[in-house]
Image (cartoon, rainbow, N blue to C red; front, side, top):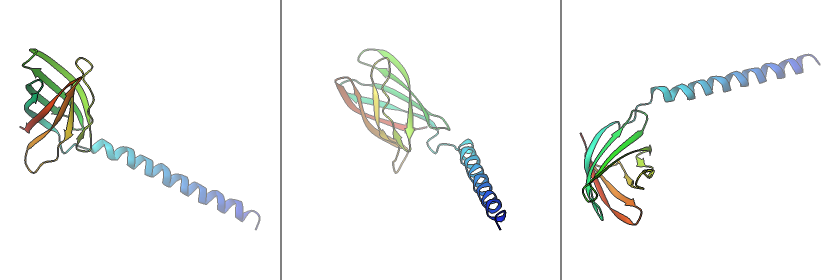
Length: 129
């Protein structure tokens, strides 16, 4: 009887440990096959205290590359952001401080939101190609 209890305990702990390893494996590999529903190219414009053109590229893993051309300062800016669900995370460009705020939820393929850059602000609109 004394031998059965520790042996039974070891077997139960082993099974629980194996289940945890299997769960971790499947959870980690679930992300390998993930493809963002927002993947693609978007083009549009921004207006307000500054204005210009936007190009937004979203990767299969929700990485976002934003290309901005300012008509006011005649400058280009390229920077990286990420999606958090359908929300742009609002990461500022290290060069200019420009940030896109908003989400990619819409009844059609046109999306809009707000932008900020230091003391400047305005709105943006993009359309999926």
